[in-house]
Structures are given as structure tokens and as C-alpha cells.
Image 1 (spheres, rainbow, N blue to C red):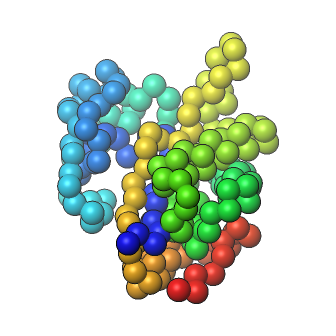
Image 2 (tube, rainbow, N blue to C red; image 1 turned 180 degrees about the vertical axis):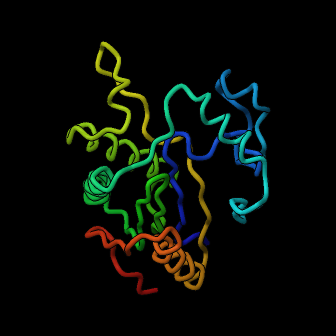
Length: 197
């Protein structure tokens, strides 16, 4: 039985559907990106981030995006955290770990009344509203004449189903240790609650 999820939410432009290392995407939606190849669907649950690949080709595809890839600043990460906190308080979802990095966020969350896909979409939506309200949306300079902003988050998310206490504890450790792997300080968020098994 699924007890929780380790979810990864990526910033716009972080991991493209035709990344040469592979992706979870079925197809490429953007004509600008399609010239760099079709979607590179993989079926593994293991990270493919360290696989050798054509880095120049990957970076060229990123330069072809409609908007520049998003890299959240510390100020923006704190706004995202406040947005996450507001949604979590309203929904009652238990979050056992969270980190917000420049290009993606990791959360370990408990199974809830509605699907994890909906929870992730609501987390992204509330954090985007918070970025906008605080005037720190990373793509604000691309606002339309009607005031619409491009999405700061990438489409979809990556998830791992956690079906045992040991899986949950391992995911929590991975998330907590993630900032150090990028040379960043540990993060503490008020909405994170301890996992007691």
C-alpha cells in the first residue's frame, strides 16, 4: 500500500522532454524544441542525471526555449516556501521533507485524500501566486499586455511511490542531504512535520 510520495517539481527549462539522458515525456510539445529530437522516454525509476551525454546539444535546446530557463533566487525560494505553506495549511497534507533549489524542489509527502498529481498542481499554483503577489516571479519581464505570466514551473512532475517506513526514511534523508550536494546550506521549513512511522 502506498504510504507517501517523493516528488520532484522542476523549474521551467530545467529538464527538457528530449533531454539526451532521457525523460519521462511521451512527446515534445514545442516546435522550437522538436528540431533537437523527439521525446527521450525512459522507464527507469533511477536518476539518469549523471549519464554521459551531449551537453552542448542539451544547452542548445535550452537556448531555443521561448523563455530563459528559470533559476530561483533565495528570495524566490522563500516566496515559494510561503506558497507551499499556505496550500499545506489549507489541505492538511503532511509534508515530511522539503527543499527548494534553484532549478527544482523535492518534497516527501504523505498519501492524502486526493491524488498526488492534484496535490503537486496545487502546490505549483499556490507558489506561483505567491511569487506574483510578492513581485518576484522569475519570468515577470515576459508578462503579456493582459498581465498573464509564463509558468515558472515545468510541466508535470516526477514521483516515486513510498510503500514502507524504510522507503519514507530513505527519501527524507535524500531530500535533506540534497542541498549539501549542490554546496548549499540545509533548509528548514515550518510546514515540514516529523515522520514517526
